[in-house]
Image (tube, rainbow, N blue to C red; front, side, top):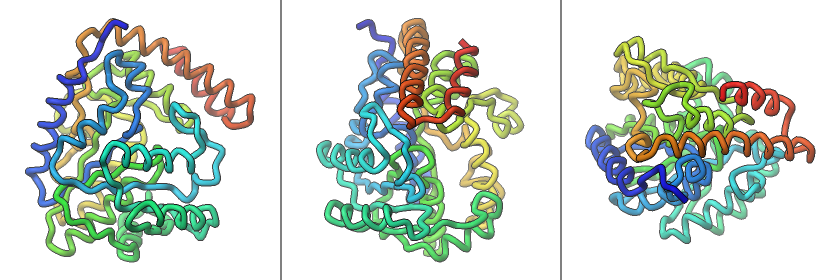
Length: 333
């Protein structure tokens, strides 16, 4: 296989960026998007990328703690996740096994958006035999609309007893409640005069590649079931007059993040950030050593995703909306 990506080069730069970001805070909550334990998508789109790169990176960092988030709302869904095509619950349990196998202990699990679901209660009993502590964070009505309601919800959430300077926030999939869990923890830390901050580690989309680049479009294909769409970061353009790429959920969430952080820190910017791009510690482009190889791999992956979604739709495990989203994505390439 011809390589289009240099994993070691990427790891070196990415580690330095995370350590640099840690110096800004007493404690850094680093939210890791995508699949942390095994990123098959990245290895297909970036030939040469080691699917266990994120695990490898975490093992080289200083002492850290991991909080794993699971959405109570998604536990009973038909959604299939990752390259192993597992349901939400099985995928989460597999993740925890892979962490342990890699020598990275997950001490805490937070089951988010909890509204007394039986599936969540059953899973808690299973998880209590595998991790130190499992917490429920209740659904916060109006969370995405009102910063005051979000803060009120954080006050009622149990606090995960973190002691490390670096905290990794990850989860079973997009929408697992990572951001809300992070902000709840930062609220509690700041009340105790701990200058806690936040950053995002996303492999895709690649902010400094073009919006219509096949690698970025492949990210849209990977998240077509979530209706994700790449966009030019409007906050970044307004502040710096530079075009960078981000995706709709991060852009939408940044507005509420700004309002929440203002109430928590009493400052205008979100922990010193003026855009979703600012929040990121993502250096994926650095590892690309042959862009043409990666372009062709990305186009191949987009077509593969289309077939997977069509297969899942026939089995009743995927929606018409996802297939329609894929039609739009195919037109882009």
